[in-house]
Amino acid sequence: MASLARSMDLERRLNDSLGLTPHLGWSSWNVAQCDAASEKYALETANKFIELGLKDVGYEYVNIDDCWSTRERDESGNLVPDPSKWPNGIKAVVDQIHDMGLKFGLYGCAGELTCASFPGSWGHEIQDAELIASWGVDFWKHDNCFTPCTSEPFPQTCWEGSIDTRPWYGTMRDAILSVKDSKEMLFNLCNWGRNEVWTWGYDYGHSWRIEGDNWGDWESVVRIGAKASEIPEYSGPGGFNDLDMLFVGNGVLTEPQERLHFGLWAIAKSPLVIGADLNALPESSLKILSNKDIIDVNQDPLGIAAGIFQPPNAPGPVRGEIYPYWAGPLSDGVVIGLVSANRAGTLSVNFADVPGLEGGSYNWKELYTGEEGTGESISFNVAENDIAIVKVTTS
Ligand code: GLA
Image (cartoon, rainbow, N blue to C red):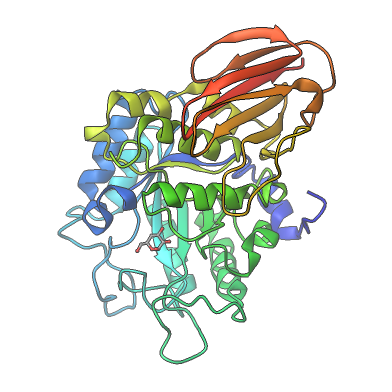
């Protein structure tokens, strides 16, 4: 945390008590990309949050991603909800979602176009902030397609490290902060980790994507999980590393992989954003996504992300791979993650070797199985690409 420069904007946000823990919700993108950016999905999801008990365990934000607008702005320059997807406009849907005690998020882009080539906010930042605030939008994701690069016109994606993405995120942050009704809006920076966003994101928004997209394959989970282990110290109340939307319940990962994906995102204090169709969610995935003990770890008020630690005699971390040993402080203890990537194995740790714990006997609980015990160490057989998440209570 020492590396964080806390600015006035951050202080103001903290005073607003906004984003003090990672946001919990759902997003349309991983469900069916453009096809899911509709009133139908938004309202069905909100209803399912209640019906499936997801609201009860903390899921709150129903977020619509790319493709919700028409291809052109109107004659006043405003974004227009696509009438075939939003027959009643967006405000009517936001009002219904608010009436259900939930929140509504929307997507836009810093560039001239969104990643799927709908109008972006470039040059329209204040106008767009005013419009979405007038609809009561609670969350804005700001993407990074069609922004300045080394050549004109702006390309769909630019990975050129010498280009500083900060200015356009600052423009939208200031636009949102300048609009009277948008003060309670979470601001998510989606610049895919460009310019080491974790070192400055805190002063710009409440969460920031640390990597390229989670494509819904195992390699993405490994790539993003490995990256998170390098930069846990940049997350804290008011601003968190965003490991990207989940692929749990989409039928692309095995059950152990889904446990590892969700568990790692949770202890790394990422926003937990479900990316599955809640009308077709397998029971096993619902069980993972609604694990209250793990959600409580993610939402712990300390807001400190777990990082990796190396027990004596354990091999060191390998770049690009998920390291087996993770730990992070909680307000009443320590959470330990034991990850068995690529092969099943027995993973053991003495509590004396875990950051935040001293030698001695503690009560512990494995949060997926509910197994409990007391002692000076733990040892678990972890299936291939699975995780054990152990909460050690100190007070
Ligand atoms: C980018 C973002 C994704 C998603 C798509 C939408 O790839 O990183 O999260 O929003 O755009 O087009």
